[in-house]
Image 1 (cartoon, helix red, strand yellow):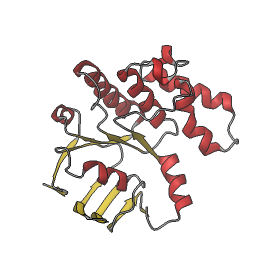
Image 2 (cartoon, rainbow, N blue to C red):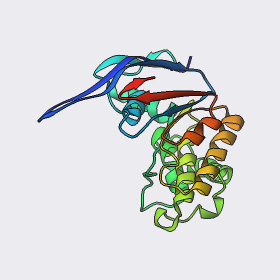
Image 3 (cartoon, rainbow, N blue to C red):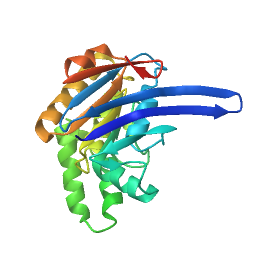
Amino acid sequence: MLLEADDLFKKYEGRGINLEAVRGVSFSMDKAEVLALLGPSGAGKSTLLHMLGGLDKPSCGKVFFDGTDLYGISDRERSRLRNNRIGFVFQFYHLLGEFTSVENVMMPAILASAGKRAKKDIRARGEYLLESVGVIDRAFHKPCQLSGGEAQRVSIARALMNNPDIVLCDEPTGNLDSENAHNILDIIESLNTRFNQAFLIVTHNESISDLATRVMRMEDGRLK
């Protein structure tokens, strides 16, 4: 078992706010699985994804990653695990504007290696990944020079840089037109087959269920 959520809750309180965004969610994922988590906006999907990825501590419950209690280890250990074994793809890409596409893709490996890995090897893998997602011709373009579909492909390549066990995708097609959205889904399916990585895709796009090995639905903070 690669990823397990055990009775997760997330509450936001204070200054007039009393919101229970995630309410008692439990499930598990196997290695190489493609799991689609569907639901309307405000269902708690992104909050759940952030807890699963080690970005946001649950109010109650536990997250286990390959047997490790993700919030039972130190912040430094969690950051190291997150960078080396979990990839993230966000709706708004979060590419660094001052860097080229290949430099953005290289960043997770540069941070992880702390100078112990040759930069030429990191660049070679970055270029290989850009070629794998079909944008090697944009390797030296900066984010402002990319279309939305190209930027999302670069962000997927970046998520794969450290060969993670799982890639967590938060509305990966949310800002794309139907053609580019379809292309991104094809890329995810191909990468899962080629590299054997698991994908957890949070979305309200029902068409994503076509590529998933399993589909879950979320509403009002709970799995239905």
